[in-house]
Amino acid sequence: MALGLKGFAAVVEKGMKIALYLLIGAAGLFSTCQSAQPDYSEWVKEENYLNRCKAFKDEHLFNSCVEFSKKQVNEAIAQAMRAWQFSAEVDPVTDQKITIAYLNEEESDGSPVVLAVVCKGKDLSAMIDWRKTIDLTTDAHILTTRFDKGKSANYFWGLSGSVTKSNNPVKFVDELVDASRLVVRAYPSGGGVLTASFDVRGVKTAVQPVLAQCLL
Image (cartoon, rainbow, N blue to C red):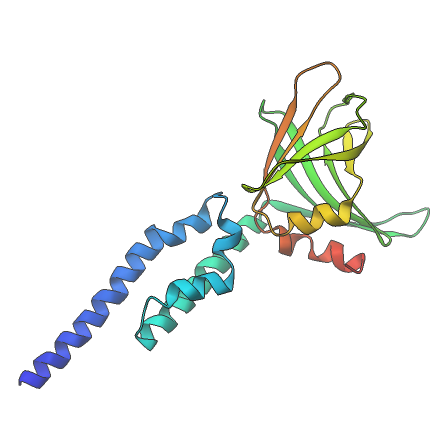
């Protein structure tokens, strides 16, 4: 009887650990996936959630932790992906295929702004459409960008009407796909600033068709 009680107690303890993990995990750690916290891109990396799961020495608990983590990460990425939109068309003059992944957001003043990654033929471009004609300062159209909590940097961007276009799209996209948030600031010649913040979660999956077309 003593052995039976001991075994029963062990089963109960394991069950309580699983329940506690699910409660704390879902309400605490996993809630990060549903938010726009800057550490999102780190949170979803397999190596990181595997390390978190190693806190469970019991093999069954470890495996349960891994499976639960994978499910939560996949659901969070799928939810973030819904914000991204796609367009694929063929230029009727050149027959070049044009593939676009784009994200609609708002400036700090509530005005609409669009982030787009485009492949036309085999040429990659990254641009921001401010949805209004702007005249930037003559300092070679410098824009300030910041990914997540990294250091902000100034880059030269081209300008045509309402669209600013990265002069180094490969570098820009390389940084973008590892980020969960992007902030861009432009400096109109009339004074003031234009600031747009993009929640870019899901970007790595979103831009895959674009990069595949450009063979990147």
